[in-house]
Length: 445
Ligand SMILES: [Zn+2]
Image 1 (cartoon, rainbow, N blue to C red):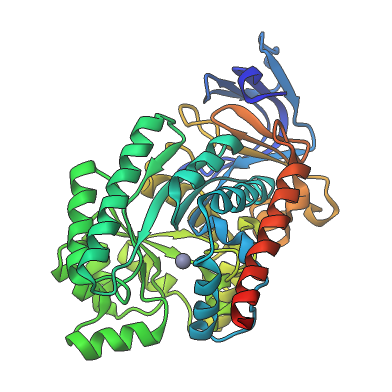
Image 2 (cartoon, rainbow, N blue to C red):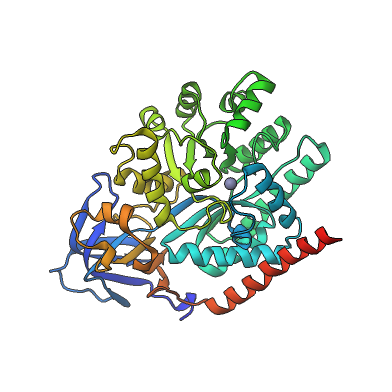
């Protein structure tokens, strides 16, 4: 099967459970879902006779839910998975940068394609990415059938000529995405962080985001060190600093956003900014504390969820991430009622859909048909007292049967519908091994 001959009309027939993520968060039983032209056009009782459709997917004994949205990744870093693990953040970054210096555009395409495969097979339809050689990343996304918001990660360390280069590359990439004309791929503006970007770069990046109407994404207050450094240098905290530069508004997306003062949280709320929780990465790199979810929620800040790159997590599995997110909050607050299962699922679906204006994230008439079909009879999903709890606390990628994106079946019975998975894995392994051996040889010289 190829992407082009996918059916336009799909009937998900007799779904045992539908986790709608609608405003009431209804879980429907025994309904069918009609998908036409990439959208959900009808949800009806199974007693209604089957319409004339091109494709019928038998969903008896299945759970249908919105496909997940990974709000922060560096997809091509799959190539570095397991490389120099269990190291302190600073020394880990140094070793990663050595390997990254060897990366070519082709490597990024190969790394991103494997990342797409991993995300698809674990129920994710869309991701927000920051890296380099982003046209190559875009090519991988195109092949995979996924959706992505891609940004060239900019850093200038205060160097003016580097700043010009980075801005030029961002503008070039935005033009590349426009010319690509693939509605599944969007560009974002992506300055790396306040400790790698000069204020001039942060402001210039904002101008680009304004002019093109694009999101402004940045790593924000991931560690105490960067927060303290900022306060020592400038006498203000990172959000206050960025707000004075005028970059925070409803297009602003802060990754990690873990170390915050109450004043910063109310600033983010008043600007209608979005924050992205990355619990597994934060725990693995021992950044300490926990994302202040309760404070964000009380202030009305929209919270999404991301895995971060595959070498700080080390997986891109959002079904795992929802569990980590909820457990970390409960553990940190000594309170079992912190981040209930429904809130964790919201971050990975409807909250992200709203933040990134994707018109998906729920199973409702009029929404884009980005859905996952899970096997409800998997032993780890039994019994069915609470489907949402099961998904958050007990699920596994092993239950993922189909992933449908824009009404196209991309994952079918756990396999990619048109890609040669073995070839992708083979190319990927060769590339990962070559990169590490190049760095090793250099060290021996
Ligand atoms: Zn990151």
